[in-house]
Length: 271
Image (cartoon, rainbow, N blue to C red; front, side, top):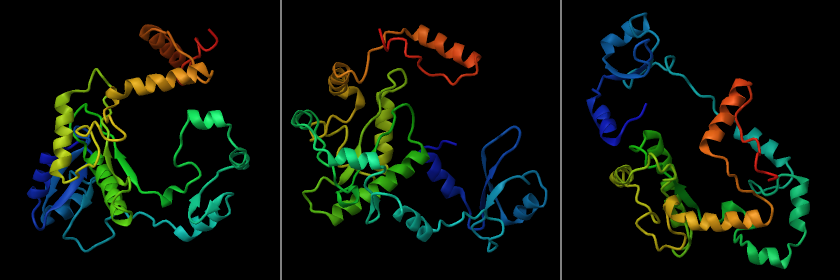
């Protein structure tokens, strides 16, 4: 189910004081929203036309009709995590013995100059949170995307309160416009307008291209990725592929016919 902000507002406004919202699954309408009253509530549950509906009744005092989610046992989870190698102060710093061996060995000076990892060997829980939301401008803002943006925004704002004002804590908006065929400027403007209407303002985004980590559209970062890709090829860690789209589709169809999960077969790996 995909709702834009206007539809969501109308849905909430249409619910009466004694109303109930039901998600129904019928042969002709798999996902439909229905607003029922308390009088029809018992009929639906007792075998009416919506007997297979999941019903949420704000006015009901009975908890037996609701599907409860089991609460996680955080104590047992912490006990299990504390036995893992590298666990310290609520964070798993290293996952394996190999990681510990590799991190203990000093890196060559040339590697340190080539790659810069400013947060290496730091506990991420001690760093100012930089929370990113990366919508795809191929349509309207999905209600699930709005929920994710809200969570990230809350964590970022809390981080700005907990850390110094000069820290890099913030809510970052990066537009994933890599799907050139479907991405449109109208969809991007619509998503940004919906986020602004929700009050989820961003600290860095497409409208701040000169910020430290800009630009914030993936299509505008092609030169950065091309440079890093060339570096990987020069080091033998990647290789270019010259397969045509038609050849890739033929490869996919052949694997599906053979019952193999489609994947690239490495045609140009040793070319």
